[in-house]
Length: 285
Ligand code: NDP
Image (cartoon, rainbow, N blue to C red; front, side, top):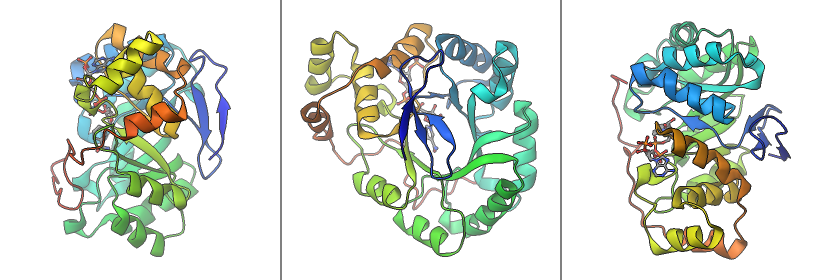
């Protein structure tokens, strides 16, 4: 991966180059748990603030709101990096699922399409990946990747496929960093995309983070986002609050020192918020 600075409206947000040459803004906007009827407004706020990278999923049931906001924004489609994800229950029919997402979003192509969870109990993710490889080769998707893949799932995929995933989107925040999984992903050229990057708000109150916030005249969320950027993570905080949407984007202007990055890394507790990907089997998603 290499980095360059995005000279567009997002100002200081760096672009990273994925393993297939496609560039992605390192700081994006996540929409998990935003109700469908509120999503258009939240994404419109984010685009107006300057975000050019939106992360949704079929399972979030809010792709239509994302698509409406993109259409209404008037921003050229190729200036917005758009990610969506294959539902667990549709790993047996990725092409139909992709077409449904594309229709809901109202777009011709998707920038990044991810297998949302491995669901090892289904035994379908490698087969689904091969279908994603075909769709990628046909040009409907600019990059393909995975989410919630543990080392054993990555090994299985890499041994039985030809395209190396562009990203692994995993839970990463100061108290749960999955550093060995992140390192393993990077060792294969797979970028780490941090989900629940603020610990869903739970990682914002400790002394280390609030101390750095005071030092930089920043908010705790900005410090945590700056920590992700400093580690090289792609980061996708979610908010429905306009001031926070803007505040989170402005974190791209903060550069923490190596010692400060290490101080936040020392906050690891090993406690995840989300499901364990080895066990998660919610096929309704
Ligand atoms: P985040 O870590 O982004 O936290 C979101 C929470 O933090 C919300 O309650 C939000 O409140 C609050 N918050 C946001 N900004 C601030 C701020 N500046 N100050 C204080 N509180 C703040 O959690 P998510 O789980 O939403 O993760 C982000 C994105 O990652 C998701 O939206 C989704 O796109 C992706 N994701 C992917 C998963 C996967 O399996 N691949 C799983 C989970 C998430 P409010 O909205 O009220 O402002």
